[in-house]
Length: 103
Image (tube, rainbow, N blue to C red; front, side, top):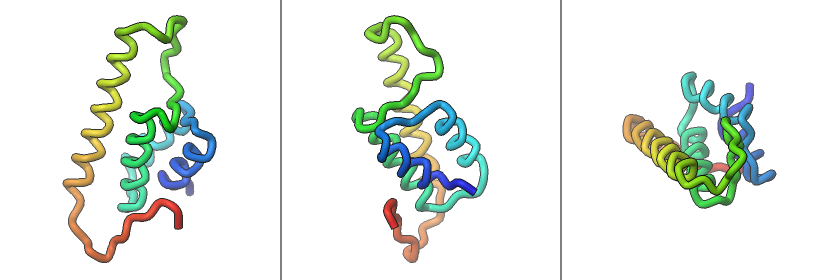
């Protein structure tokens, strides 16, 4: 079974996150995942926000410089970051968990 951290590693290798991968992450977030997957998801969201990873848009528009589209995307990214932070805060603290993306 594919894990979130594997999808994130692929996105960093290619610099791109497809719609299919976005959908797969959403499905995995509704299931059981570990702290490494959550850490990887947060790292991915930061990379998308900084432009390090490009996210395929679900609704392609002819004019990519459309100001309203950019604002909506910024709000969406902010909402996803807030969701990831809220999920992290809900997790019980376990000092034995060592978050890592690469190992």
